[in-house]
Image (cartoon, rainbow, N blue to C red; front, side):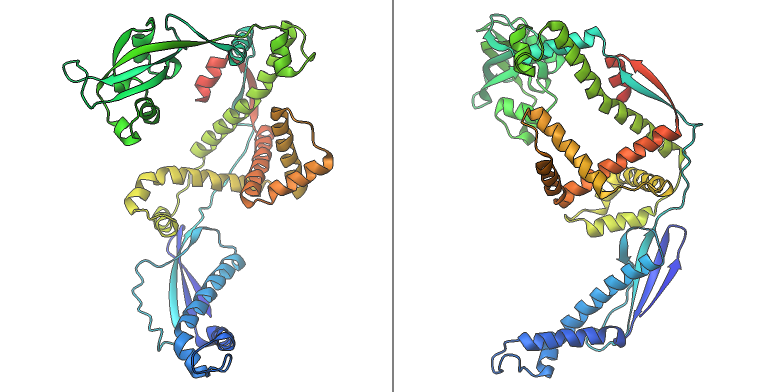
Length: 448
C-alpha cells in the first residue's frame, strides 16, 4: 500500500491511497476460509462447501469489506505516524469520478480530502488585564432572599383582590371581531400566574375580584408558546399563531403568604437547634449567597477571557471541508443550506476548542485519574449535602465515584470539568487581575 499527501493550501490536503492485491488478498482469503467452515448450503455437508462456491457467493462482498477496513486502519495509522493535526475525519474526495470494477480490478486508487488544523500561537501575559467581579452581599440582597425563603415555606391563602404575584383561576373564552363569545372557539378553565405573564397583560388582571371579567389579546399573555398552549388547551403550533381576543372570568384568587421568620422556619431549613436567631439565620444566608455566587464570578471571568482571546487570536478554518463533513457524518439528514445557516456558531465553538487545546498542550496541563476520582467525590458530596442525607463512608464514596466514571459520557464530562478548572487556574496565574465587588443587579447585567 502506498499513501501520498498533497497539500492544497495551509488548511486543505488530499491523501492518495494505492492498494494492490498483496495488501488485501491474505485477509480476504482468511475471511473466506472462515465462511467456508461455517457455511451451511443445501447439497453440501457443513464445512465442506467447495472454495469456488464460497468465492462466487461471498468473494466480492468480502473483498469490499476487507479493503474498507484496510483503508480505515491505514489512514488512521498514517495520520498518527505523521502527526497530522486534522479537523473532522478524511472524506472521500467529492469530485473523484473514478468508477471501480470490483469484479475485475486488482489494484485500486482512492482519494480522501482532509481539513488541516490551523497553526497559531497563544500568549497568556500579565499585560492582559481583567476585572474579577464578585457580588456584594449587602443587607438588601440578604433581606430579599429571606423573603424568598419565607414565601417558599409559606401557606397559600385565598384573597379578594388580585395583586402582583397572585395566581388567578378562571375561565377563558374566545371572542369574535364584535366582542361576542365565538361559538366553537376556545373555552378553557385555567390558571394565570401573574409573575409569568407579560407586563401589558398584568395590568388587565391586577385589581380584579372574584366574578370580574377582563378582555386581553392572547399573545399578550405570555411570550412562551408552550405556556400559552397549556393555558388555552391548544397545540404548540396553533398557540404560536393564535391572535384572538379572550375574555377571562375570575373564579378564585390565591396568594402565597410568607412564613413568619421564626424558630420554626430556622429548624425546618437547618435542622433543630442549629440556628437560634434571625441574626444567625441571616448570617447563614449571607455565607450561602457568597458561596453560590462564586460560580457566577468564575463563569463571568472565564467568559471575559474567552472573548478576549477569541478577539485577539485570528486564524481561518477549512470551512468548505467542514461543511461537507458535517453533512456526511450527521445522524439525521441535514441540507447544505441548514449547515450554512448554523455554521458561524459551530465555527466559533470549534475555534475556542482549538485555542483551549493549544493552551493545555503548551502549558503541559494533565489530569490524573486520582484527580478525576476526587472531583467526582466532591460532586457526590455536594449532591448529598443538598439532599441532607447521612454522609457516605469513604469506601462507599469511592465505589460510587467509580460507578459514575464507569459511564463513558459522565466520565468525559467530569474530565472536561477538571481540565476546565486547570485552565481557569492558569488564567489566574498568568493575567493581571483586579478584584471588584459590585451590586447584584450590576453584576448580572454585565454578566448577561
